[in-house]
Length: 49
Image (cartoon, rainbow, N blue to C red; front, side, top):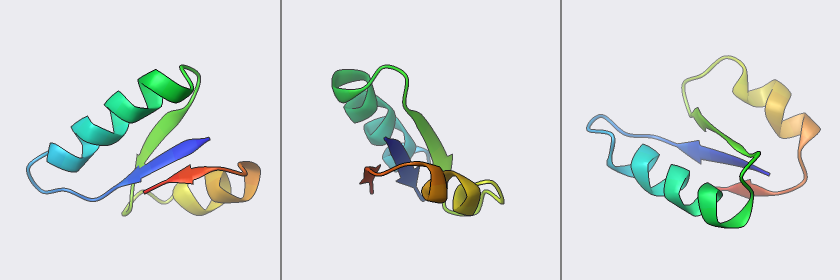
């Protein structure tokens, strides 16, 4: 599972990180602008937006 966020103020990043903490403590959050995001999407079945 990975989380994807987009935020100029950090609000959606905060929310995604809280959701991931509850459902999968090993999950990571990535910015929509992160170059690594596409590679991570290919590796994971569940994506939280």
